[in-house]
Image 1 (tube, rainbow, N blue to C red):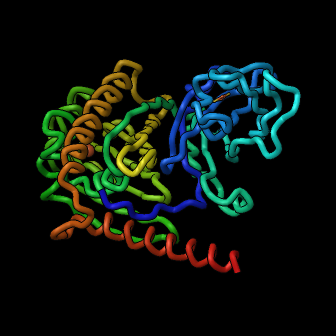
Image 2: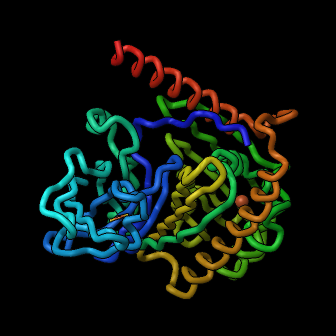
Image 3: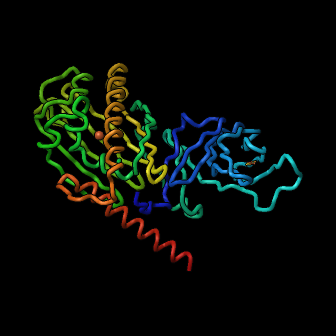
Length: 349
Ligand code: FES
Ligand SMILES: [Fe+2]
């Protein structure tokens, strides 16, 4: 595998709110082992380096004692700042005994962790997905995992012409590749692809959810934000009824989803997902069906990207027009990494 740099001074997501309790859990981001837990007294999430400063056992195998975390090997205890506050076998704490602590923010169901210089954590805000905190929308989360570089997943999400081939039985339909009017644009540090497909066959999973099997107008608006967030606004309406502007009786699906492709290590990805459906839209049975079909489709992606990773030598051999969005993302991230490297040098002088 070719290890190429990733952005550091960014908020990454290391887990879901629903996963973090007063039992420590292990995570990993940018190759660094993390332990996440909630303090019993305040319920606040703490993220520390998951490596005891004594003999490097993972703290995630220990337990929470008071608001501290106790290593499960020889019992050293650390407070929420990562400072060692107790060594059971002696009175003195060795000078400098501490593990790294990471700034974290819990928001909209996600645990955002700052992986860069802690002094800069106020310079960037965590990714905002307002649908996850708005009562008009119902949300459901998924926690997936892939043995691949997270950038291959971002490429996958930025090129939905794979749908008719990789997702034949779920969300794919032939017109998605051939009949789209697509546009790629850069908007500050975001890359947006807008695709409209008129009068195409509906995808099998959508027929199963809506019961509507005639042709549809379908749209996909896909927006990347660093370091690994991809927001999809997707939907369909009965063909010829106005697409995204269709009247409610002609609207079939109108959804927001957020994919999080988080670089756990150079070759593994924490793949989180949240879907938001209008609270007064689909029934709970329809929501279950679309959730299950989506997760099935993502597992189809995971299978093909893991196989791709096995062959991946770091550089595509050819590009086609549909790669415009993914290539724009790579250019954007390369520029942001160059800026970050330059700023780090300036600070070091
Ligand atoms: S390794 Fe953690 S206390 Fe010894
Ligand atoms: Fe896919």
